[in-house]
Length: 146
Image (cartoon, rainbow, N blue to C red; front, top):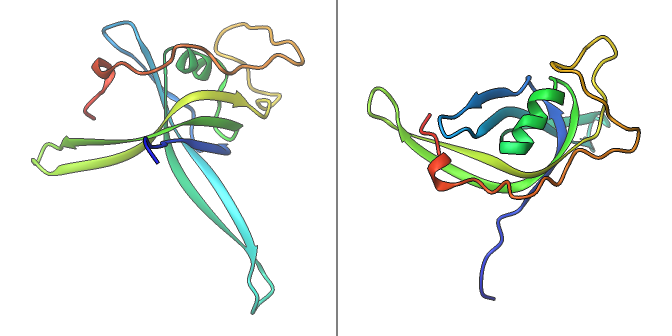
């Protein structure tokens, strides 16, 4: 088999509000943690056991702007993208690593709490989908060493 596949699909909840960064080149970056859970029943005790994994997610440009306006801690979202390993040197000279999901598509699956208001006025039709924004591939110049 020629080639390879690097594809990630997650459905889970935001662990925190997205952190938004505006880069010098004008691009917007949103990063947040996302929890996914799986559960099973312990055969011995009969108790339901739930395991939660945390994922670092990064969205670029248009998707980052959507995240800035609409995403809040606790919301359920669908993210499709790829894994990216970053390597950098910390202040003490130690090599550090981080694996992130670089989101290429995102769909919001839950509404924000009734008491929360968006950061800017917006209108969303009942069946409007906020996903599949085109041309969001990150540029190699966009890689940040943090």
